[in-house]
Amino acid sequence: MKTKLSFSIFTFFAICILLSGCSQNRSGLKASDHNLTKISIEYQDPTPLNKFIENTKLVRLGETDPLIGNIDNLIVTKDKIVVTDAKNSTIFIFDTTGKNTAVINRQGRGPIEYLGLDYAALTPDGEKIALHDNLGKKVLIFDLDGNFIEKKNVDFWFSSFEYIDDNHILCITYGAQNDLGLVKNGDSKNLAYITDSDFKIENGFLPNIYTDKQYMHVTPHMKKFDSTLYVNPNFCDTLYRISGNTLEALYHVDMSKVDGVANFEADMTNEKIASALANKTTFPGIFTANDNFLLMKISTPESNRPMLWSKKSGKIYTLTDDPRINAQGECGIFDFHMTTCAFSHADRFIAAVPAYILNMGTYTEQVLKEYPEMVGLSDESNPMLIFYKLREPI
Image (cartoon, rainbow, N blue to C red; front, side, top):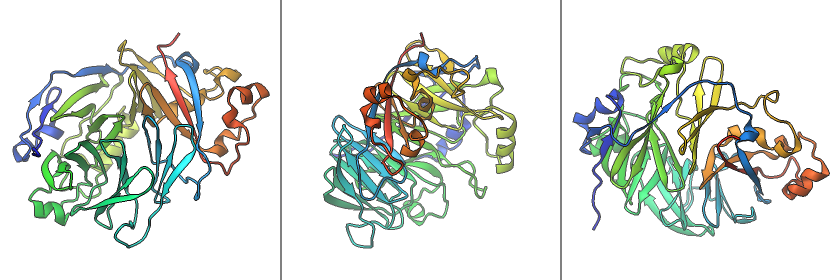
């Protein structure tokens, strides 16, 4: 028998972006601050990247038709690599060596085709991929050999989704108050919704406090790394983890030592946001997590500053891709891409690097012997995946 999820929210202090709408929220939200780890942001002199890199592994994605245009999402399992290319509305599936095993490209108006590919998520069993088509108001499910399995109709718009478990899905919306599906459901004031496995809404949370602001960027950030599902409101300094029936405040990114601002209130406007970005430090919600580290981008008036936080030691490190600071020897030939890692699996961060960028370099015979994946790489090749295993700096 399916049961509806009821969420307890663990939150630091009083985050008005969550608590202001709890009285309107049907999910029975509660507030607490336990199980919260503080990540204190402090700027130091950057540490050279090769001090962190224990080893590097390359996976060259094999030839496909069409070629991969852009990697919007990357999912790595024990035996598959799944690439979402929204621009080409295509899913590419590889084995762990990079050999292409299937391509899903079903654009069209038919019952098992999609008008556009807005998002794709792996099912909880790890055996199927669910493709979301907003315009077609449906989710199509395929196995990892590219065979169609089933269709789910959806009646509201959402930007992304991930499975919580076999019976529940988290959907992130655009904050549109006139979404007919949400209005019909009786709840169009939230930004995140829990649905059953057929995308029927059960609960809503994360109230949209900017309902009277047009063109405000309010969509929360959601990322799934292996089995861990994170969600955080826009410009919020707390990362939440959905685990079982709990929405848990997991990490508080404390920017008090660097003149940071976060958790904008209901009177925020796009102009005020622009002023804050130009003059203050903020956390835009850009991060990648693996088993041992969090790689974050902290926005300063000068640039996005990459920072690495160790789950084991609790230490924070400032990173840089400045070649004057980083070692430039052959052993560090791929070090500079580490700060671009947007994906992860287990204890590794993963960078997806276009072939033409790698081809800008000149590689010695020693490098080509150590990394045979580079041999024969051309500008027309698919991207290279670089897997980084990190350590505490030495």
